[in-house]
Image (cartoon, rainbow, N blue to C red):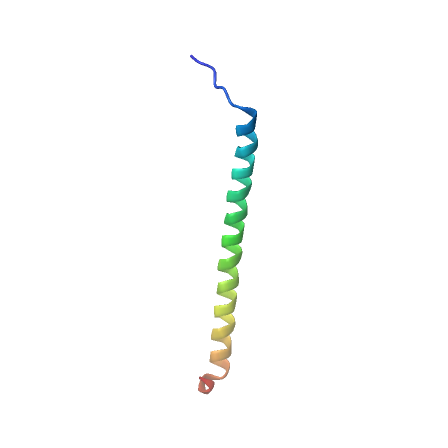
Length: 53
């Protein structure tokens, strides 16, 4: 069985890739939550004043 050889530069890049994927996933969730909040507010306003539109 051979040994797994990893270059030190690749280890640093792996951490960067993991951090980027985590950040993008968090931003994606935040954007979805913001969109749902805006839609919820719009529905609430429409229900309060249905003749406005």
